[in-house]
Length: 199
Length: 171
Image (cartoon, rainbow over all chains, first blue to last red; front, side, top):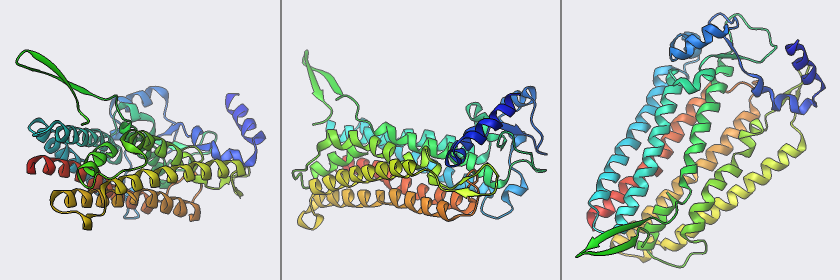
């Protein structure tokens, strides 16, 4: 009954808006053969980090989407960001001036955040996403659509991954919001001095 | 990143800018928010499939207008923030020693960041030209985007962090 109501709602919606909101309806997980996954099985998949719902050879058929290759790209980038973060933060502890220390700290912080996001992106590309990314790690079909024999298409699965990955990438930039001016309190010969980190 | 670039620019030419460190760094998240309206909320303005499941129709004009306005504002912020940075740093050829290196670093990193909006436009053009339905994403584009963004992030974020460390070592 609920499904028929949704179909009616889609039909009464303006043609231009139907496609716009279509992705919101992509929440019917399907198994390896395209059947709808029961709630209890879906819960089991979520607990198992979705290994059983990985995209298999069909996903890699066009040569562009080799799971190992794609994961390697983001893994290398995350390693580079992680190393840069360690170098910058370690240098910040021994920088000769507070301005240089603040610069190293800020740059290191940006890399730490980027590293964390890249680790999540790597998991998404490896199709072993953490629990919070359960839904999109499964196969997807538009609600009300007939399930094809092999579940959702490669393009649909890629679309679901791109939603996750771009969301992570864009939220990364939010960390560039300028924090309230930080101050460092030091004591010299018993006198307390407060210095701004931005000189 | 913008804060650190401002600190480097101050050590380079230390010329007068028109935005300053506060507005420069505060506007950047809004640049991303506004610039991605078309992608995040209107599915990159891809054609929608009509109720018959076959016909492809353009999205409403208001979606195009909102996306275009958001992108234009985003580009305005991007240009202002980066022009402010390079003006503050000064032309590397006019400087010497560490100041020249700092100015060069600001130019290089702001230059690399141009790659992000360029990639965004290329992605939009590719998605508009593909024959795939609006709930599918081209595999080649997805892989290529991963590769390009990995290079851009590695050059700008990691590159800036390493340069910040080098600045501290050489002092």
